[in-house]
Length: 342
Image (cartoon, rainbow, N blue to C red; front, side, top):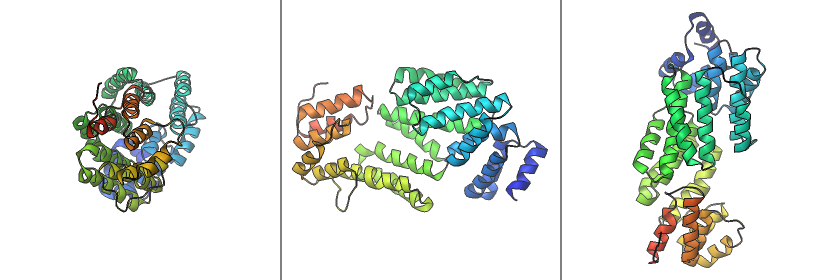
């Protein structure tokens, strides 16, 4: 069945995009269903395809098509289309780093909200903005508001995808808080969803890091899963991140560095430390201006310097509220038999 035929049936029988997605994925498989649904969204025959279609395109990483649909909606004579177009325009510009957190908040204020769905979506965006700016007390308020509004929405494709986004935020939040059982629960639920290969690969990539302190094999199971996705779908950005960040990082932390290389200078230093080449690592790391907490951790590790390791620990905690990665300098100080006072 072609996209055109399905589009005509959708228009004549008032079949929801939500129902159609579930049916197409079962009958045609993900890739064929994705193509058909993309065409349906771009035809813009119904309010649902114009408005919920943007979320479908975003979640499936169809950014070129999303930009086009946003622009069409922003210039629509329908106030609902315009409002949705403006909301996705704000969020996409933020994700593409064209505007910062403060600008995103300001732009959201100028959008006239028409429906409860839009109010729910705005709470999601605000939750993300607070999370990304490490304002976790406000994040907690808005993620609860978002959850409450989400539960009130009628079943739809939009609701399904917003629920996935809710799970993803909670995965990141609980991981950051070192609440790994809860974090992984959300990640594994996300892996059961019909998402783009890139998003599935990224979840496996993140999951690999949650097993950092549980052994090389546990972490590399998810690395292998992410690599398989990257290879099958030729996702070059994911391949690059795995090869130059995740793999050398996990390998160095577990002392399994034979045959491992990277183009990332910090991870070159990290691997050098694991190989006992501490002078090489120090030479690389001391050239870095305004080092990150990770780079400070590497330098403290190379120099066996408690003060640098403590600085790294407090930066992970105070600047990023990342209690999981704060375990790295703590473990280093313990391994070096340094007295730890928290």
